[in-house]
Length: 356
Image 1 (cartoon, rainbow, N blue to C red):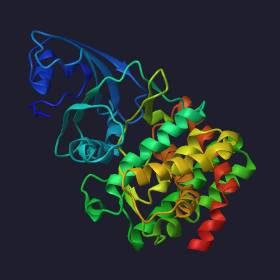
Image 2 (image 1 turned 180 degrees about the vertical axis):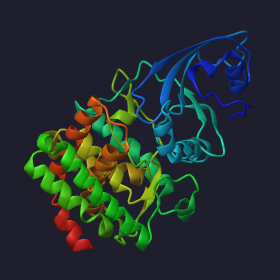
Image 3 (image 1 turned 30 degrees about the horizontal axis):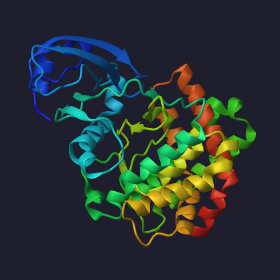
Image 4 (image 1 turned 90 degrees about the vertical axis):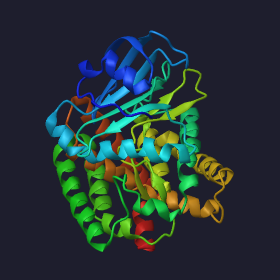
């Protein structure tokens, strides 16, 4: 990755001159078009032609820039810092499949950044509202082990400066619990009629125990994606490959929180119930294949059940703090319904009482 002097703030700033500096070759022309949902940033496809291309660089890339809305940008600067930190300092140390990064740059205040990635087209983004099928789910959970296993219980990551979510002390855990309860109340107020009485009750009860949940001394941690769901995954047309994107919620915590968040929000409840035991086994086997030891499948299953509270927590935080859209509300309703059903099916609240 190289450094250039001017970070583009808008798509029209992604000029021939800027791209030439970022890639280290002479670019003859550039075309920039928007792609993606743009919830926490602005994503564009960059098409380039070259005066000369001895390195065989691709003709298209994807570039992420900060959100155009200043209010959104101010809320997610920590996410921008985390994403750049992941590609600059973590990507080469883990085995999770991600797009190749060609340029990564951020200013000191983390208000401006540019992330130039390989274009994985014709790969398609997962559909969070529709949910995924069994084959996609298996790809996702085995890929996840490639993030967790290389960072498993490695204390260097506890103080990694690029984390958006860290392990919390007593005061931090209490603060998170207070925020969670506020988000639960706001979510019930905004979406209660669509969620229904049972899901509202489950959501409220789940977010009422976040303080002991995040404080539980389970003794296992790794780097976690934090928002491991379909919208942050790209699938090849043949269904054989997956790429994980959007590393703005990089954190450290119980690894199975990522696993449970994915299954609880990205699978329809009937499919999740039918295949989740096999998915946990596939994830556990992948961890062992990447070198994790002294972690049996039964403990993995209990961590999975315990980790399900990641789903209602992240959904409620996202609903309250993200910019609202019609599709966004529909997405949160679908995810929360699935998550609350998973909390009930897996008896997660009962497990939290036992553990904490």
